[in-house]
Image (cartoon, rainbow, N blue to C red; front, side):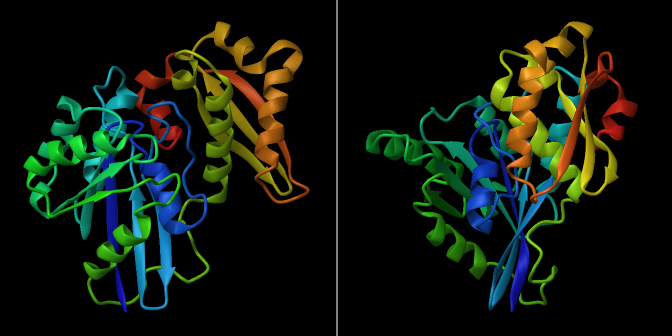
Length: 279
């Protein structure tokens, strides 16, 4: 039996969460086309008869402008320590830039895997150019993959398994993540808000389950300005209703979820609020 931990790091929106989901075969992390969707460390567990690999999804590393941004960056870098393999993800459709290099400089790149993701969206020439650009990093291995279609994922998984040390499984076979149910539901709500809200508003939103009397769940949605409250609720409550329907579709039948919008002024800049939200 081989078992160990693999951390994915990289710039925002390079597909770390989608790749974790592909590796585990189920939805572990919420996904959206907006950068900085992931805010906390999330673990997904891949089970096989002879191995168990725990994948760690991390927030995208970016130039922070809020205390929240500083905290999520610190979470991502801390997650790259004391694991068996670190994988640096880069986007095949975008040139390797200073942000990617900054992340590479803050991990042990000589032992890391570099994953060129989104090959399904890139041309063959773009993929070759990106592989050429990252080849100078001196990483242990390089893999072109598409987390969305699964192309190249089995080969990457097989290579990672060979590097897992011998040892017992860390989690029982029926466990695919260690994320608590309440946190997962709050994340589902935030995922749907990311899908429908525009401009900068999604980054001013936090979600937290405040009551749990199964099958009734109350989730509060926090915004930073009074003017943002109406935008989240929508005309006649339509937007909030749309979010609730989408969330319930991903939960067990019979669940009743209540959504309430609360103004918490400038919550991204206050350490006590961030801690309360689990950041």
